[in-house]
Image (cartoon, rainbow, N blue to C red; front, top):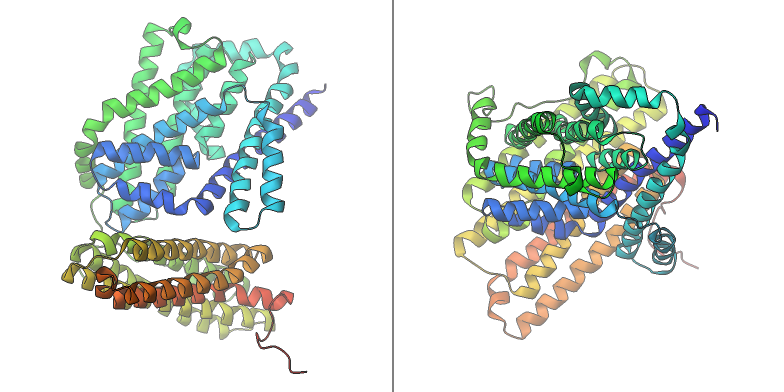
Length: 553
């Protein structure tokens, strides 16, 4: 086989692996969002509980980076302490290593089974949960298929004349191999995919274990670097988690690198072949990192607070600087200006997510300080809303085409609706949370589960709305509009069941009746506002009816 064809097959297999890992993560986020938030809520306790939650979440999401970004959202809202967050991330590192260990087993027989089950779930079983479960299973099947394809694609390379020279150089130069691991993982943005690919290369004899180990250690540092880079624009409380975790990983990787260089590798204890040995060493490294660094989560949190102190706002009060991404230099170029408005709307959406995500936590055990912190985020939402309206007005002062003018109106409407959602959270849901805390009320078990389920559904729709805003995907837009009826049905069913509990004289339902009903109305209204993001796109494509009224014969 020609070398160009080998590279083509290898590139296709590698991209399939990246796509498969992302497929599983997306499916888990959509199908198990409530479970993930439950684990994340459990991380508010001690460091051991946080580490256990991190392991579970990383195994589900197949990504320690995804866990880190979820934790950053809670930390930015003040609902996750730095020490607990660092413990969570250390656990997530071990969880992602366990995922690599599981997927590296010889599971080729699962490939046709995964595709078969996925097809049945996606095509024959109704419901969003079934479709997302099919997505997860298909992703696992694709991961296994991609690893098989990598092995087949690299077969001819084993006889290549240049391979011994490159492998020998990397085996002698640990520093270069380490940096390759860092850069490669950063480039593909997935440590799971990077280590799986490296293990496949090592298992098929393309990379000797002496070179693969420093590359693997570099991949662990690269994974921490990914999360740190993604958190750069977030609140300092969020940045402290990823920076502290990166320091833990870097120190551990350098220590391990020195140990390997000076004492060698106990190959007879690591695995039967190079690929298995590398994966086992990857798990051992992350387990050792968790055990050794967990007692230092508190001191590291204090160090990060000193290195990354809270920013000071223009009025002298501590807080996050408001970072508008509206670009004044492109006001005269409508296409670029409207793209700038879209980016600012995404920032507004992220602020709304930070306000909305912890609502159920606040309903359960939130304090006044946490509630006030979320109200400050609403001020940022209001400022962004005002800035967008003024910016669009400036853009309209120039020469716009009809399509550009219409798009400006649509984006302004999105800003207005997002600002309204912020007001509902700040002036309704947070007020209800304060009332519940002041009166020490408790929801009934059934009532609480109904509210939690509705909150999770609206949270998923918030993420979907932001995806529609940036992607203009018709399928996602149709799904978002369909969710309006689902949420309305959930709200109506909960309302009726609540009235049934009142008739039965259930004390907890009587005491929390106003809280329950007002929360239902607020969540339904938030969802209705989110659905409007899809209306302009579906109107253009003819997928949206002008009225729900039946025609008169």
